[in-house]
Image 1: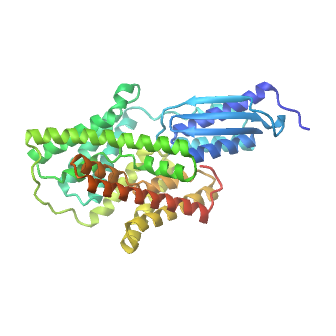
Image 2: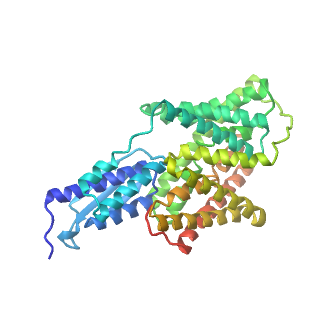
Image 3: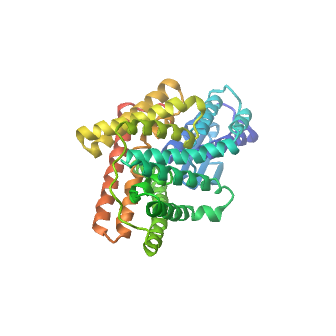
Length: 414
């Protein structure tokens, strides 16, 4: 029988596993993939780990396999964490370090140090790029929503303002709690002012485009995926979090609507011709570039992220034209899921580098916000009908991703 490692050695392995969980959670990893990654790395380190991940915590119960298969957990760790945002650069870095430690290429002490060696992206250049990416994404989505030139300009300007305001969130928990309601109010009011005093706008479409980065479409998709894979605690919690974000945005917009009505700013717009069809492809290129910054991808992965966004959009566009919107989303999810798994298997890197940007233009966050618009306007039946469309699109997208995992099973947790 193999001699058990000393207690200090066991503690080193536990510390590494806890640090790994912390970094994966911070990088926005979903519960199924985080738990699978932790269990897989733990097994390679001769640890038996039971993990539970939620949007705000990770619980790890760890036993030393060298004490026998029936050994009781010797260490239970509760990590209280803030909800993570997608960070593809950190995810790729953490995946590489975990692989090196698991294979014995580097020891655990060096692995813990390597996990924390990635410098944070803050500073004037990084903050300016992030704010500008908000604006670029908003302007591009305005084009994809068939907006006119003025719609695109206002959406981009308001989106940039929202991006600049988002940089104030770190270290300000009180502001963060009400941020969506505040920016929803400010964005909608600014759009009404431009509509009344500058040029007629498609107010609803411009508002959605300006707020597109804050809409919890990806969060909703992740929640439904977690529910479908029986990670019920995390799925319900994430679904409630997404609903809270939508409600705060909806309240802010509704408040702005009341102020605009009181001030006489909600004038009937004059129909304006949308941009030429060729603008769609330019908008797609701009949006995919903005996602590289918003998802904090490493420079080497920018071409991959942009190509993935194009892949998902083209699949859903042409699939939707041929088979209907819902089935087009399913086909896009299927193709993106297979492509992500193929990339992970062949390149030994996280499939999220393909999967997340590939579905970002498919997630129906804007549909959820539209349903709230109708409810606040007291058109409950149309609001419920739109909400049902949201559910159908979410199920179609998640089903496509799950079928992709069946057709081409992933060999890597991430």
